[in-house]
Image 1: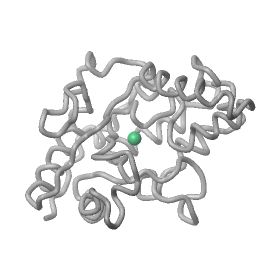
Image 2: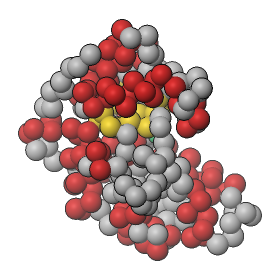
Image 3: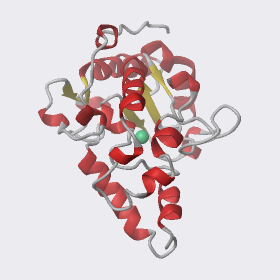
Image 4: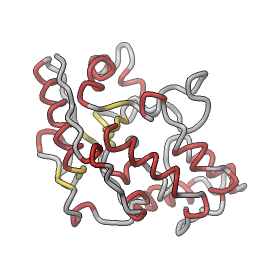
Amino acid sequence: MRTEYTPSVADTGHWFPLDELLGKFEPEHHPEFVRLPAPYAVRADLYLRREACEAFIRMAQAAQEEGITLKVLSATRSFTHQKGIWERKWKERARAYPDTVRRAQSILEYSAMPGASRHHWGTDVDLNSLKNEDFEVGGSHERVYVWLRQNAYCFGFCQPYTPLGADRSKGYREEKWHWSYLPLAALMLRQYADQITDSALTGFAGAKTAATLKVVQNYVVAVDVECR
Ligand SMILES: [Zn+2]
C-alpha cells in the first residue's frame, strides 16, 4: 500500500525556537504537541508534534491492515527526561570508565546527551522493542522491520541510525526501532546544525566531554543519508 504524506509545517519554513531543539519545554503543555492515542502507544503520556502524530497513525493503520502492529515505546523526551537517562548511565559506568571522555563515548553508543536527542523534537519514535535482534530474521518483530523498510518512507518516516559502515561512518550504533518523521525532522536537523554548538550542551554530568567528542558533528548530524 502506498500513501503519500502531506507536509504542512515543513512547507511553511517554520522556525523552531532553540529551546525546542534542545528539549527545554514540556510537550504536555505545548500547543503543537498531541498525545498518542491508546492503541498506538504503550503508555498514556507519549506525545508527538501533531503532524508527526497524524502521519504515524496513518502508517500504523496501513501496517495493521497487513497484520503488522506498530506500538510506540517512547516518543518525545524533554531535556530533563534525557538528563535522567544520561546521568543514571553516567553514575553506573563511573567505575568501568573512570576517564570521562571514554565514559561518555560508551553511553553515546545508544543514548544521546541531554540537548542532543532527536527525541526532543517531537518527530521521533521508538517502536515495538529496543533490541535489534528482535527485528532480525527469526526475531519476534522481523515482519515489522521488513514492512517498515519497504513502506515507512511513504508516510514520511526514515531510520536515522542504520548500521555503521561505509554509508554512515560515525555516530550512534544501529537502532532498528528508532524511526523519524522526516518532513519536520530534516528541517529541525538543519536548524540544529546551523545554530547549536557543542558548548550549548550544558547542565548535566559530563557535559564538558561534548566539545572533545564533537557531539553535534559526530552524533547529531551523523544520521543515515535518507534521514537528512
Ligand atoms: Zn530512539
